[in-house]
Length: 332
Image (tube, rainbow, N blue to C red):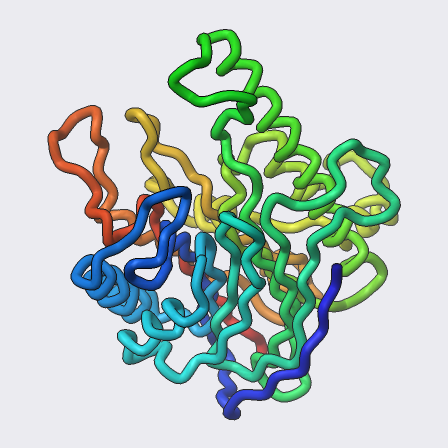
């Protein structure tokens, strides 16, 4: 299902802006239940929205894609805790059942949005829709320059099981993990199809943010971005590929830096990069016809704890993911 809405916000234009991605780790109003019987007390909830507000101020991002939102009211209250994002406009995908959703907050004018739940009709697969809908938003970052933003939260690595977790064997768990991977790959292909349709034969910048639930070299992530052309390909073939691929800001940053500390999640001792920002060629410095470039990238992961090495735990009111921010520097 695709829904379209026109929204306007106050004029706020600049040559440089920041875009971020933020997995909120089950943001919901106090006393409301999620995932069965879980809920936040009023005290924990106030700690959570205060922490989110302080992180948003640290990030200083003008446009933020959010994941794991159960409650738009809670998201609005969290933004009110931020000096920087207090006046931002919000677009959120309605939740389906007991599944959290995605949202975007912007300090720039939001011109329109679409909620994309089903896979493109051209795909012939058993899976027909996203676990969590994709949110596509058109935002005017300066007069006469609108950028398409996609926010995604793909299927997690959590096994897809037919019975309670405590009752399964190791082999059944492995089978469930394979099923989850196949589902995520199907979602990646669907998202890739949407991206190609947005980019092909158009000079229209696009930015994808979100929790893709795998690292930047994983097959599912590379399906979404597409692979750059090989060096020996003819120029006309290269141009066709450049037109429809996305560039990972992590890789753009790593070419400028001697060290790489990009991780956004720690699971059982493994430091992983699950949260991503990707940009189209219109925002890549190496493209002579670009309208801007990625200036720098920063991860806010100092609150994460490797629980295999410490008795400490990430607080319930924090997120178990890092936030990622990319600075976009426009020309002119």
